[in-house]
Image (cartoon, rainbow, N blue to C red; front, side, top):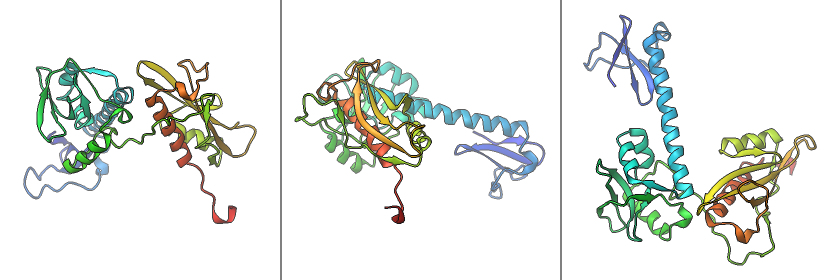
Length: 291
């Protein structure tokens, strides 16, 4: 985006997501040094306000693109390749999608997404380091717990210097144990994390993207076509000065029927454990004198 006049003295432009100014007499010469901050004389100029609002819109748009790609990935939903081709020219979409691991029709149709053309074809770098062209009708961006070659993909990504716009390969994952108690309905591994108050705990939960529902922190997860609700209990805000997390459990889509642990799908299990672990990680660490 080029420079725009803002009065007789300054020009403004959007650079790296923020509005910057320079002297209007600088032109394109080497003396055109940018100001460290917006001069007070032009802060209320309509050109400046317009650029600031545009920058805010770009930030929101980038966040929305990343959130949508995350939803596709966490849910392992099939995404039409034609849709990827239509959104690819948009820099925000491209930043969210580039180097995501995609899987096509066959078990060998897997690689890091590098391009999507107008014909609906995708170019990916496969595990042999070759750039190949895929033309399936849809692809998935699998949740990492579903990737059988996850460690190999992580190693290869490190060799390529891949930095994903959406956390996929390095998303924290938990695999469901095979020796679960068939009658068990909850897990206490991350329970009893103490917070200074219910408000600190609820703020931590909402900042991570989770929902407060009654006396629980919840996350709705799509797994193989089913909807699961993972929930972590939380203490009563009116009964205690401090707050604690409770057990982790899962229920059906409406949250009414508790599920046995053996009924929980692999993605729902991993995402529920991820939520509980993140809440536990944010707990209040007591000072030495309080122990």
